[in-house]
Length: 361
Image 1: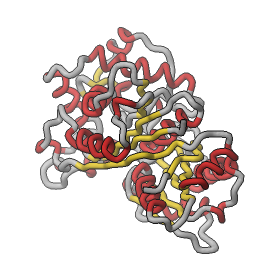
Image 2: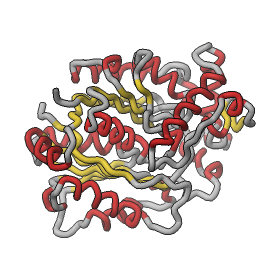
Image 3: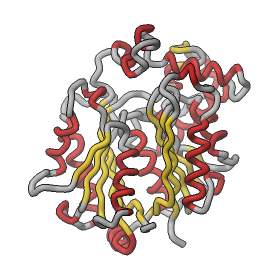
C-alpha cells in the first residue's frame, strides 16, 4: 500500500445558523486556507471529493453549488458521496492508493440549521413502512438506545452528564466550537429530559460549518507537510461497516459494526485502537461515548475528543470529517503519536468507520 497522509486541515466556525452565506460562501475561505497553508495552487490538486446530504439541504444535487468554491474549469477529477464527508476521505484515500495522482482535497459542508423544525423531517430518514409513519421526533431513537444502555448497566445518567461536562470544558480551547463552557454535573442532571434519559445537552447541537482536509501520498506528503510546518498524519487503516437500517433488528446496546471495523483496521495498521493516544469520536449523543469506548477497547487514559467533539458542534455531514482533521492535527502538532478517528451515520449508530492514524518517528 502507498503511504497516504493528512497534510492540511481547515474548518470554519460552527454556527447555530448561518443565514448570511450560501454553501459556496461558507466553503470558499476554508478551501483557500487549507491550500494556502501548503504553498500550492489548486491546479496542483489531482482529485477533489466531497460529502454532503441533499436531505439536509431540502433540494436535489445541492452539492453542485459547492463546486463554485472548487472551480470546475478547466475540468477537474471530482467525486461526491451522499453522506458524511469522512466517507469522502475513504474514497480519496482509495483513489490515491491506485496511484492515479499524489494530492487529493476532501471537503464537507453541513447546514443542519436549514430545517425550520427538524422534527418535521427527521423521521423521513427512517424505514418508510414501519417507523416513519410513527413520526418519532429526532431524539426518540437515540433516547431508546440510551435507555437500553441504562437498563443493561452500561452507563448511568450521571456518567452521561460527566461526558457532556468534560466535552464542553474541552471545547473552551476550540475556537470553532458552537458551544462550550464549564458545567457542574449536578446542574446538568437538573435539566429536563428531551427523550428520557437524554437531556438537551446530551444531543450534539445542529450547526452550519465547512471543513477541508488535504491528503497526499509518499514523499509528496512529506514535502507538503514540511511546507506547512507540520508532520504528515499517515492514515494507516480505514474500515467501515454497516448494520441493518431497522433499529429493532439490532442489539442497541452493542456496536458490532464498530468491533468488526476496529479488528480489520488493526490488521491493516499493525496497531490497535488500544494503542492510540487520542480518539476523536463521532458522538452525536453523550451515550455514544461509552458504547464506542467499549466496542473499540479504548483503555482508561486515552484522551477522548480533546476538541470537544460533536457535543460542541455538529455541522451534519461534516462532523465525521472534522473528527479525522482533529485527530490528524494532534499528530501534526506532536501531542499524539497515534490517533483514532471515528465517524458514524444513520439511526442509532448504524454506519461506522474507524480510521487509525500515525505520525513518523
